[in-house]
Amino acid sequence: MNNPTNDDRFDGLYLNVAQTARGIEPLLDTMFSFLRRKTDFFSGPQGSEDGTDVAVQKVNEVLAKHVQIYRKDQERKQQQQKKKKAAVQKVAKKEKESSSSDVMEMGPDGEFDVSSSISTSGSEDDKGKPQSQDSASSSSTSVSPPVASQSAVNEKVEQEADKEEEGEENGKLAPSKGNGGTVPGKYVWTQTLQEVNVTVPLPDGSRGRDLKVVIAKNKLKVVYRNETKVDAKLCKTIIMDDSFWTLEDGNKLCINLQKLNQMEWWEYVCDGDPAIDTKKVEPENSKLDDLDGETRQTVEKMMFDQRQKSLGLPTSDEQKKHDILDKFKKMHPEMDFSNAKIS
Image 1 (tube, one colour):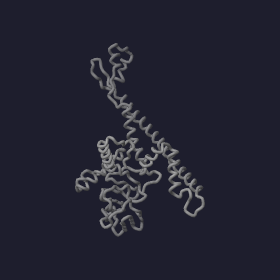
Image 2 (tube, one colour):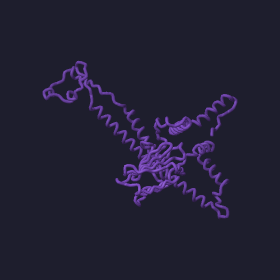
Image 3 (cartoon, helix red, strand yellow):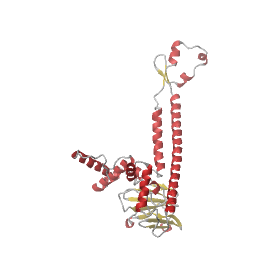
Image 4 (tube, helix red, strand yellow):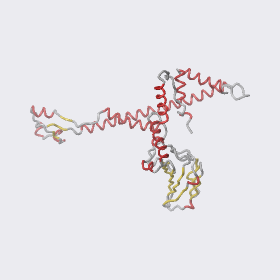
């Protein structure tokens, strides 16, 4: 279920309304006009007293909630900027130290002298002698090995920081190997499009009779010697009859859950677990080869659409609609499509 305070499903609709309203106040007028005309937001339920005070109170509560969210977001962004700046300075310092410690001197004969001792120290006798013109000119000619420019260093560090920032902003973790994750103190899980595998560590010498495992279509429960290891609702619905569990090596419980919808990735196994970012899931190509033609085509389309969304580009279906509109424009050049909207 989407978090209402961070729900982006209606962004396109709101952007369209905002562009039409042309301003924050007209946009808010439009929203409250809808609530006044089409709902009981101001009047309250039928038979109740004047609900305007309740309506004002509710608006203030929601506004205050989003002000707090905004302030927290700003604080987090400021902290991330500080971390990014410190990382840039650290990398730049390292680059500067590595470049200054490795200088090649050009000798009188035109050859490069790479000995570090000659350029930095001399014999005690030479220290008191004046330099000749040739030696003075040769010692002043030095060539530093090529190093990454400051802008390139900054760009690299900022890219890494942006990746971390993106993960922190959506509150989701990058998938581990196997496109799953780890629930500290509970279990490790992996997944394919068809199934989810959960591994629960147990003490050595564990036996099947020590376990009570309940696999329901929407719930998982694991009890080990009267200690509840897992008891929560599953992320998605599973096929009970095809799901099973085994005890392996006397120290780990392996649970295989068959997905009901085999065309989607799970963000987590049980409610309350840390969620992974399914946009970063990377299925193995070898697994795609095992699928039949129609299923593989569907999976590849889904992967393409996920990549397009992460890059802010149109999905395959959206691109088709754009192509159809472009074709229609060419067929009817006399028509004005400047205000055409694709839905």
